[in-house]
Length: 259
Image 1 (cartoon, rainbow, N blue to C red):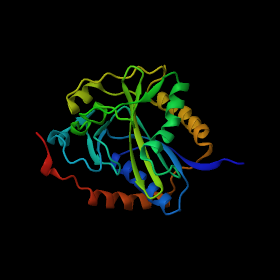
Image 2 (image 1 turned 90 degrees about the vertical axis):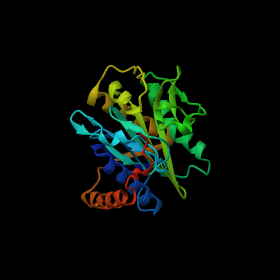
Image 3 (image 1 turned 180 degrees about the horizontal axis):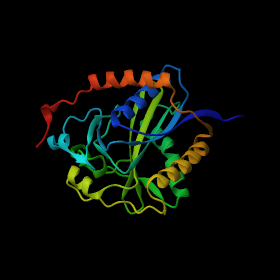
Image 4 (image 1 turned 120 degrees about the vertical axis):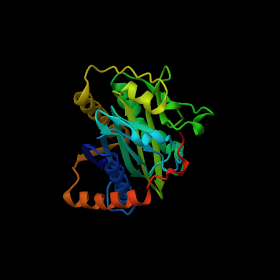
């Protein structure tokens, strides 16, 4: 029996508001039966902080941050969870259906390709365990829940979030590859211990290696064939419409800012 075919959208490096609009559009299209299951990887340009959909509290100074001469974008995700700093990271997104009704089981089914792929690169990962302080911590990487992947010594490498609409799921997550420790401290006021990656490459070469290995792992874990297909001009137009709507509906409310 032939494997099902998923779309693989090539690496995109654009603003966080555009990236979130793409993920939202993919979920809506898949839910409507107009788009196949999709895997994609992307980076955030410029650096950004993404807020969970229901997150209402964050420090006021986050709106005045800059990195390498560019303002740090503050954007809301369609998924839940806490704030994530997107700099030096690689984000994955899976949009698919048929994972059943259990949210945690769906997380773990999807995360299989991440665990297998990173194991192939020489890094063993396991699920985190949520501490009681999670709900009070605005920093997604400050704690590890059962939906997150940590090294055997407890360092968090991947934080994931999920949005379910009917039988369709959007799950996306950030992999900290080459984070700027000083920027992380500036944002969260916490020391960051970067994961020591077992790879010699850096920069674009590192990202390309991780994408290749994880794409191959996804093919095995999901028993699928991946068809590379960039976004078309018409799709970009639809995504621009979603971006405009998303920005309008999710204007960041400043009433609950903390000093």
